[in-house]
Image (cartoon, rainbow, N blue to C red; front, top):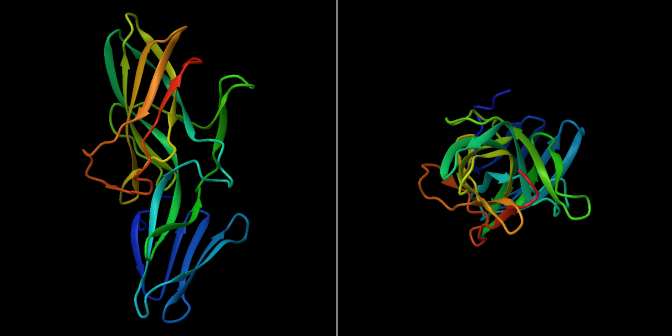
Length: 249
């Protein structure tokens, strides 16, 4: 089901609003001159899972924003998986001392934000179930969101409100070819770009090089201003981190 009439961004609600996103129905209704109620009904659970009371200036509309978010917030408390492991369905082969650029897909969640004196997230949900994977050993591994994606040298079509597009710049600093089957990307605190119902992650730079004991990949999401999309600015003070894949790729 393609959701063409619903987009990311701002919704000014005067009296009421209802949006259907797959198995979730979002409703906002005015209670009186300065108060609203927000509810999310989950059709799978057949119940209202979130309810928030909102305040606005007397007689003014309430402002609600739908933003794409990295898939690290659900189910709560989701404080254990701050990285996404993307399994490449086709291995990336990178020649010595060269760079390969391509696109992947990554899962996203939908955040609902309310703006009064400041923006605050009042709800977050996933439009599909996500998997987890362990990168490394059972006693010293990293829990990641797990996703499989094809590689493409052109922008891939994505599933609205479920996925975002990822531009990857993979550089091989070694004197021999390198084969990459997965990437582990640190996404905590990362802001995404959006346009309509399309979402985009900043360019991921991945550098293959010789580590102390073995070959590693240093992965980082680079800040960019080249896109014609709008940035969410949910976490503008968080600096993206580098994650070093030392346990194979």
